[in-house]
Length: 109
Image (cartoon, rainbow, N blue to C red; front, side, top):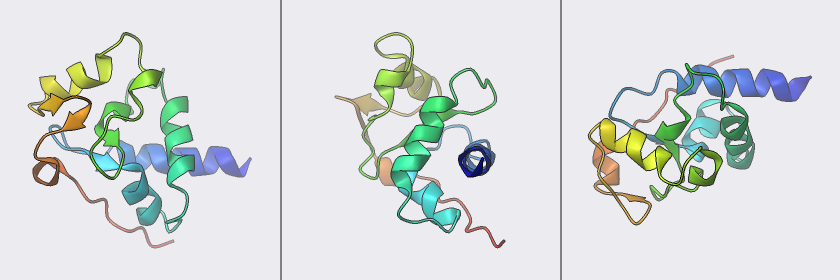
């Protein structure tokens, strides 16, 4: 199924996000050459729970909002995971977002 292949590519990029950094759904989509597929990246992140090696908590929306937090067990798990990496979060918003942002490399396929 093509969706599974896309999801695996998303997970491959997500695994590269450095500790203490975040990226956005759109940045991952752009890196995959599918700039209009940010929502599908979000679906992939939602489906990644249970894959311990995919740091889904490091993927946020383009404004640094924790829009995916509802998909984490517990009320503030996503925020707690980010804070454990030194990222300050206030009202579901990453503080100093540009400082923490990681831009994935565009893949050549």
